Image (cartoon, rainbow, N blue to C red; front, side, top):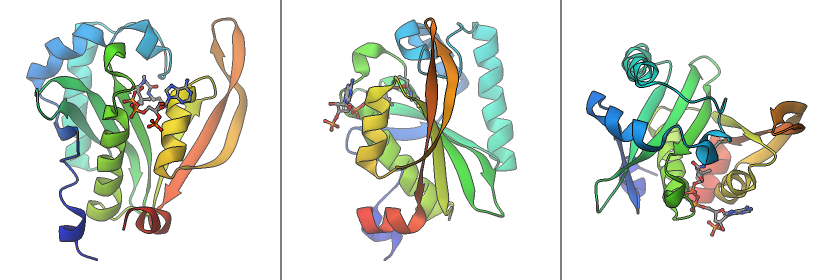
Length: 188
Ligand SMILES: CC(C)(COP(=O)(O)OP(=O)(O)OC[C@H]1O[C@@H](n2cnc3c(N)ncnc32)[C@H](O)[C@@H]1OP(=O)(O)O)[C@@H](O)C(=O)NCCC(=O)NCCS
């Protein structure tokens, strides 16, 4: 199997992945602090534009160190900034890393962008970076994300019980991963 058979990992059916630019800051600040999106992420507390500027800077440092790669997800036809997708904490000995994604504007959820961007970054991780395992964490109340990850081939590998406090209740954090061999079997 050659990379020609798989095509560019940066061009999906609906989205393209490209580096996050400083000029994306204004688009990031449009919807990034939307609670409907942020409730599913590390923490739901709004970020200032200064914090986001620092985040963009940190992406360049991490990419240069090859410890994490984050890409802007851009709508293919309209060239609209949709969000970002990452492979983080890359461990080059064990060839494993952590996946993360966010489509910022809730109006852009359920349009296939997240699935498409995830497929792209799996291709990047497995066929370009030569990783062997990509893992993720997702809150059990994030039913849409769990569905997308199951659909794309991630397997459930465990739970951190009652590890996430959300709107007055504790929820499990679900752990999932996908291995290189499983990826090849599904996407060859
Ligand atoms: C999670 C996320 C990346 C998914 O991307 P998306 O573009 O919205 O999702 P898609 O349109 O590609 O796919 C949605 C799928 O979930 C299904 N779905 C939607 N709501 C659902 C629900 N409540 N329960 C189960 N499945 C659901 C849709 O029917 C669709 O299924 P299909 O592909 O089999 O038809 C995106 O919604 C997002 O960024 N959410 C906010 C931040 C977040 O949750 N990040 C991930 C943290 S782990």
